[in-house]
Length: 222
Image: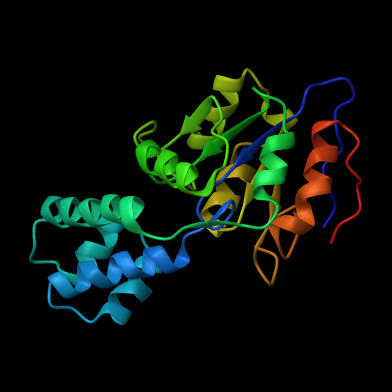
């Protein structure tokens, strides 16, 4: 893929997804959904396969259509909050170095999770927290809508053309693309459709992300 050209003289910004991009939370998500499924007498593996493809309310509609979705969501949130308090989390290799090297006010987090959980996970992993966090409560339309990334850019005082989105999931990639931003994919074995560049790991992208912020990122792909 070909990277988008930098706009000379303009300040550059980086907008990060969290789960799967900066923090490895796959095992935690699996554990939470297993506990939730067992609470409702469901097969945990079947539920998790649905949850991977849909948002929670859509998952509930498929696996427990006769239950109150608000009750189901409250139970899920309780389990997620407990996991933040007691679960084991790890930042992806390169995350601490990368975030520590970025200038204050030049980056943000854009997540489908909630800010208090993100802060809890960052505290557990020692990652710095930026001034701007756009979470699920910040917007009425989540990813793949462009709204979350556009709101983050607005709060940073940035134009979409000067923003680099770092994502690992198709819905997040589409959100960044719909927002008119440069989108790089990380932590996947194959490139997600639409990304301008692909890196097998976050570590492999660190120097290129820092180069982007200086306006000198290369135009060759990976």
